[in-house]
Length: 102
Image 1: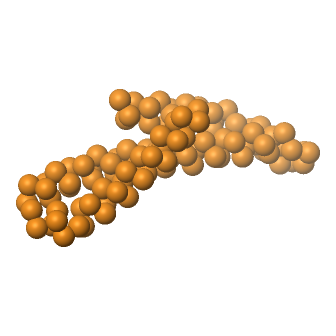
Image 2 (image 1 turned 90 degrees about the horizontal axis):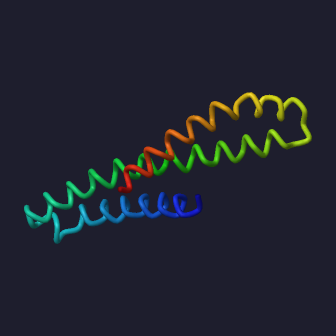
């Protein structure tokens, strides 16, 4: 799991790097470099969106598990009701994110 979290953060950083490259004078002045940078940016953006969703869902699942184990009865009950749906959503997003890395 930690490997996927690290990979998600790396993917988001790659988007930032692709964005910086896309706006660099060297790329802006060269049509071939601009075409490649634009394509790389589009791919990076798609993967980064999945990575962000993966990280947010992972955090929501972690928070729900902590709430379910909390001493607050009402909060724990609400979290326990939410957990199955979050777990299913997380599995789907995790699989989609993993597939995007292949």
